[in-house]
Image 1 (cartoon, one colour):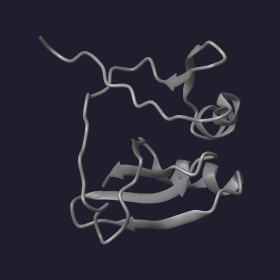
Image 2 (tube, rainbow, N blue to C red; image 1 turned 45 degrees about the horizontal axis):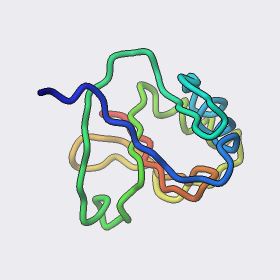
Image 3 (cartoon, rainbow, N blue to C red; image 1 turned 90 degrees about the vertical axis):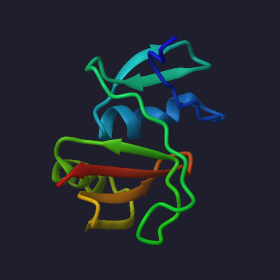
Length: 116
């Protein structure tokens, strides 16, 4: 057996609230929308990973999601234009990533990062 995909499921009251943050700001595609469940993602091949953490590194809280992007400056610009407050960073971390934290519309802590 091999794992083909890992999907993170976040319980919310209203799935349409994800559209602004995940599709319009971050640029993800709507892969599926049945009204009661909406899946955002990319058609690019991605690594399958799942992490277990006691902290988020650099004494930060553990983020609910980590989203790696190819251009962190563009992600930061989109977040700032959308008026979404930055909770941490941007910072170059000693383990080789540049990142910042924001909260999505559901209050989930999102770690946006790029390898430096």
